[in-house]
Length: 167
Image 1 (cartoon, rainbow, N blue to C red):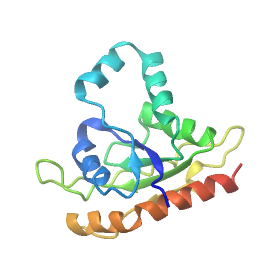
Image 2: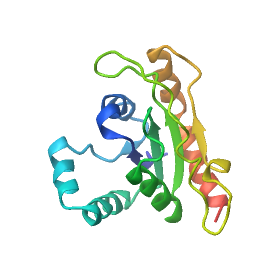
Image 3: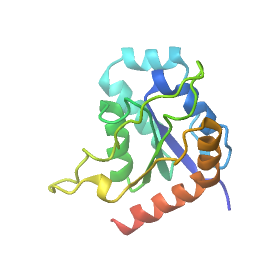
């Protein structure tokens, strides 16, 4: 089976080191990382520029993987990426990455499920009632990495199936 093309959604500043570990797994094809300078250029141009950047990077992707750190849930653009992905009929899945080591060899605190406060239009039903948010059951960074490595492609396929059932 060909690798799925995915979009990674994450809070850049605190989690980019952890995210690079996930991207290195190689079981799925993710969007190319954006440099600090490029992202700053996009941000300087305002909200419409950010939205266009996200929309363009979501094209051709079948699933969005939200990599959840301490401060991921509830961020404006992460919420936008999740809602846009779901509304565009893409799978969405979240994975807690707080127990992976960052560049300073530190772990973080577990963040909230980013799907919890997103509700379906004209409904009180939350996206968290449908979309899955995985939390590796280990504290050791290497075990967390291996657990994600062993399961990420399965979680992506499951997310796509869930989305296809919830049209």
